[in-house]
Length: 121
Picture 1 (spheres, rainbow, N blue to C red):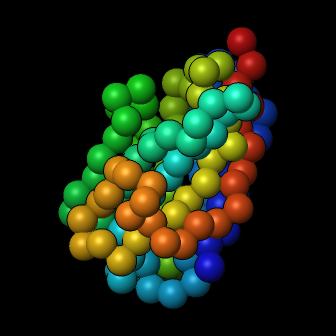
Picture 2 (cartoon, rainbow, N blue to C red):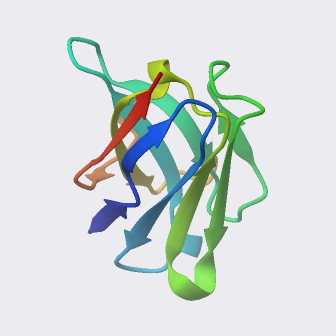
Picture 3 (cartoon, helix red, strand yellow):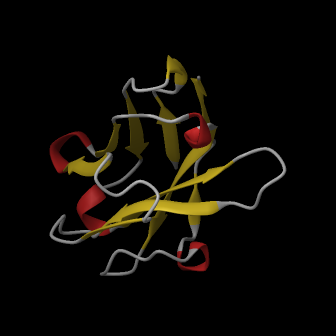
């Protein structure tokens, strides 16, 4: 079971930190963040391997978003800086038994409910 939190309303240029609480050991799963804006398909945002040694980012967020994990707290974070209006979406976290950090949604078998992020201009 996964639970995403930390969304909200922020002005462009601002920051938010999303959290994904995982039921189970986060060192047993790769975790990814995906987002879906109204009228658009779900898209990959970031992912982190079970070891934390590998991370991947969509080009649109590279340099602005940072994914990390705290295995002691079974929680994965996504720090989002320099937010833009086009980052507005529902953000969801997902877990995969893959040993790498997948960027395709079909690798993820466990999904949590999303959290809304709204960036105003």
